[in-house]
Length: 101
Image 1: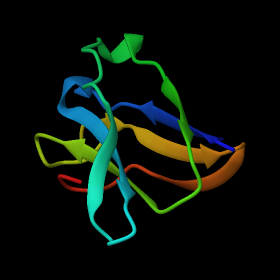
Image 2: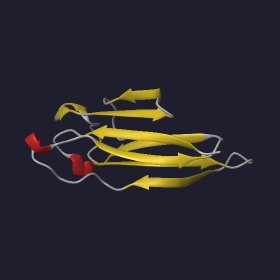
Image 3: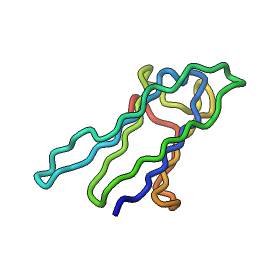
Image 4: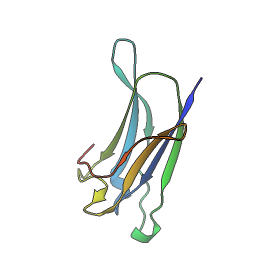
């Protein structure tokens, strides 16, 4: 049975720099891009909002990656953005400070 992975991103002041990808692994350990979230839409500072995706995934090995094309993450230089992952409602991870990924 599939589980629901919820991906939430509250972008910094430059949401168009942010995207994400979800990779699955086969039995030989090779990774394949499974899902990719489009770049977040441009928004004024006051219009930013949480963007959420719900992705059904099967049991297995997965890797989620958040990317920033300007290489300054989504917190804290240009706004206090953050990301959060949940699997079937249970927290998997969260953050905001990173470089390019």
